[in-house]
Image 1 (cartoon, one colour):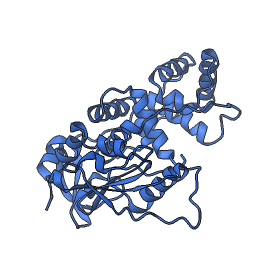
Image 2 (image 1 turned 90 degrees about the horizontal axis):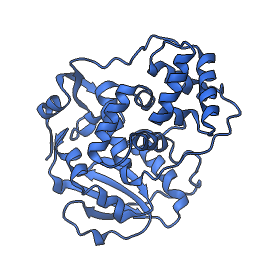
Image 3 (image 1 turned 60 degrees about the horizontal axis):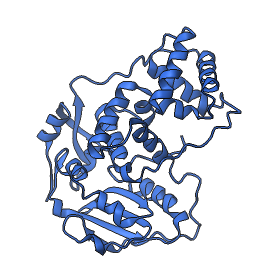
Length: 309
């Protein structure tokens, strides 16, 4: 039976083992066996979000956003001007030129607030899409680690430059070769995945009867088709993902960097206990909404919660 390696966790996270606490969705503490409690870890020097108590002038932040967006001549969204390091630098510089002294974090949170509360009407933003299938796990794992270690939300990670840099570093170690913008945009996109599509009222959740031993089974056992897979360590659900390429998606978890994330950081499983259950789905329009429902209902350890935020 696998065991949580308390001392490895303490060493890796630079933390101390303290009392017991309930665990929740997305907490790495939920890698315990059957028990519902785990030793809660806290960092020796808790991360303080820059300028948490500050306020930024909403009107000036919105003005700076429109000014730099018009100067660039693009139709990017407010989220794009936060997640894209190049655009964000120009946006922050414009805020400074208007006399704003607040931290980058507060300025970014303010423009995000403006977007969520309809202070940026009439933008007619062009949708920004990237293909993140090959590094979705890396972005979700990184966000989960920072949530557990610092209590940071996805918005915090994207808005605070220091957290964003830590997030980029974790994601890069798991899936090298992508830009900071790609990792950040992936986590924002994953959070919203499937929010517009709905499963039919009579939709039956697949049984996920097909079973694949991640380390030992030959890859050609998995069909080259679209579908949804669930990654387990024995009976503990670790990760859920929909994909148009089942074999390729599962293969990504066999890579050394992905296995290292699972086996060397937080607990000590036997790699032979990693099992994938999958279901082929020919109707691709159901892939993302099914993934969203499974994440919401079954709460895998390494998936971030889905929302429309």
